[in-house]
Image (tube, chains in turn red, brown):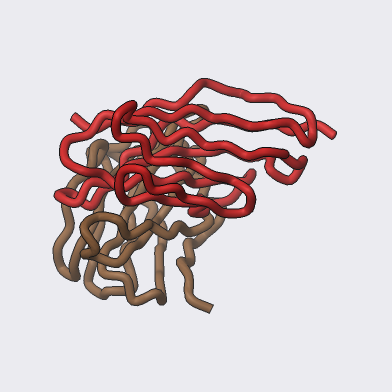
Length: 112
Length: 115
């Protein structure tokens, strides 16, 4: 079946450090891939998406590239800020179901 | 502004009581979803609806019920049969079609606790 695996957290970084959060997936067909961010006490916000192989999604300095050969969609940011502290969810959506399958989430803590 | 509104933000349930969580959207989205989030875990799908008057069970539907009488509304009832209802509940909506690449938009959630 379809599934998403994220690296375990929490990830703790100093401000201006480089961020990578790993995400790999298992899916039948050709899924679309998403990263969502959740700030404390809030719902999820779409951060970026990619709909086909080799697409790069980007937003607010975050990037992720859809790698079909490695079934991965790793999230990266060159220089994190304290305000980036949140929980990040990788998710996939297949055209035949329309449902989102989420990873377990990775907590990012950025210290000044 | 278009968006998804969940209410209430906090809800308390007594033993043996049914409670209903509200979800309203004005995005003109066809599909709506309910997820449950537990600490340290990802989101799990409870129910979803792709059109009015139709809905399907998700992965953890037992102890929950829904209705979809209007396009903009998708209330979730947590029944007394749900033995562990304490969680954060998130409602989402999306456009249909587009080959599955339509993102889901989320409300701010309702936190349900047992008294």
